[in-house]
Length: 399
Image 1 (cartoon, one colour):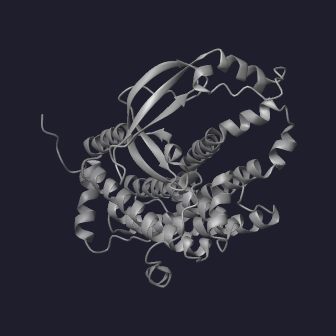
Image 2: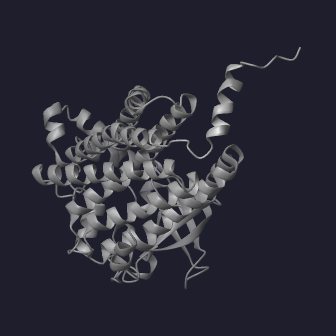
C-alpha cells in the first residue's frame, strides 16, 4: 500500500480552463436583498411559443405563466472581485426554487456574457444547516462512542483526506482508476480499522477478510463491466469529466466507484464477524475451529440478510427519480434493466453484494483459525486454578 501511494501520488489535480458548464462554473456567494412581485407579462418572462400553439403541455404552461405573477429578486454579490455588485433575476411562479428576502444563495459568474447577464442564481447556500448537522453527528458519535467515537471521527477525516488528496487527483492525472481505488481503499481501511479497533490479531483478521473481499469485488466488477459493455459515461457529469479529461478510463472509474462504495459496508461485516468469533471463543475456550466456524456462520447469515437488503435499498433510493421516469414511460422490466443507466446500478449492487456475502464465510474461517490456534500455555497454573473456581468446587459460599 505504501509503495502504491508513493508511486501513484499525484501532487495535485491538473489545471484546466473552465468550461462554464455544470460544476465547472465560477461561483460566488450572494444574498437576496429584495423580492417584489411583478406581472410575468411585464417582466417578459412568459415564454409563449412563437407559433401560439397552446395544445401542448409546454404551450399551456407558458400561457399560464403569462397570466401569472412573477418575482423580481435583487441579489447582492458577497465575495470575489465584484463584491457589493447587485443584479436582478426574474423568478417564475412554477419555478421549483423560489427566492425570498435575506436568503443566502450561490451565483454563477460568466465573464464573457454581457455585463447585465454575467451573474445568475445557480443554487441555495446550504453551508450553515449542513455544518450544524455535521456538528450534531459528531457530538452524538462522541457522546455514545466516547474514545472509540473520537477515533472514528479521526478515521473519517483521514478517509476524506485520502479521497481528496490521493484518489481523485491521481485519477485526474491519468493513473489507472482500478489501481488507484485499490491502493486508496487499502489505505483508508488500514487507517480506519486500526485506529478504531486497535492493533491486534482480531483487527488484522478483519483487515485480511476485507482485502480478500475487495479483491473478489474487483475481479467480478472488471469481468462483468467489460462483458456488459458498460462505458461509465451515462450522465452529464460523467460526460463533462470525459470532455475535460479524455484520457480517463470511464469504465475503470465505474469499477473504482464500486470498490470504494463497498468498502464501508465490508468493514462493518468483517469487524462484526471477527468480534463474534472472538466472543464465542471467550465464552467457550474448548470450542475448536469447526465449532467456531459453524456458530459464527449462523450469526453471519442474519448479517448477510440485513446487509444485502441495505445495499439494494440504498442504490434504489439513489436511483429513485430514474425509476420513476421508467415507471411513467410504462417500460417493461427487461427494457429498464437493459438500459445502461439501470444496468450500471444493477452491476454495482450485485457485485458489491457478492463481495459482502463472500466476506462472511471468509472472515469467519480466518477468525476461527486464528483464535483456535491461541493456546494459553504461558500461565498454566493460573488457568488450572481458575477452572475449579468457576465451577465452585472446594469453596464454600458466604452467607
